[in-house]
View 1 (cartoon, rainbow, N blue to C red):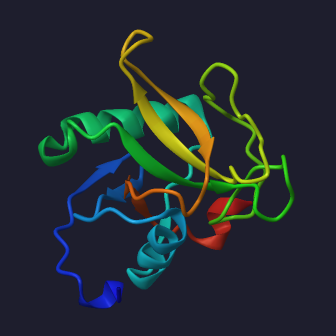
View 2: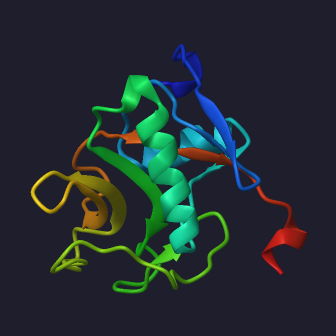
Length: 150
């Protein structure tokens, strides 16, 4: 499937100088990453509790996706098993919101998803999962300038 030919409905919001987009399609983690890049964007990075709260609020306020329970995040341990980094900056994940007993860190589970856990106080937590194993919605964000990474 060539993502370039997919009709996409983009939803956006500006939150704390970040602009998020949820394309109207599901993809595996690799295709999601490629798609965000094709938009001159990155898969979303969540580097603080504030970032996490803003992302969750965005997802909740986006009516079309309010019932979705899984979204890819732009993090993986593909470069080094057990060492999770953000693909947009190659920075180590310093803030995490892993679900209980996660990451399970099996060799096949290298990518990070944000899941809505209806069994535990209806909260959004993170899980490591096979990058190609299933398709999920994903969040792209506007690229930050190099100055913002310093």
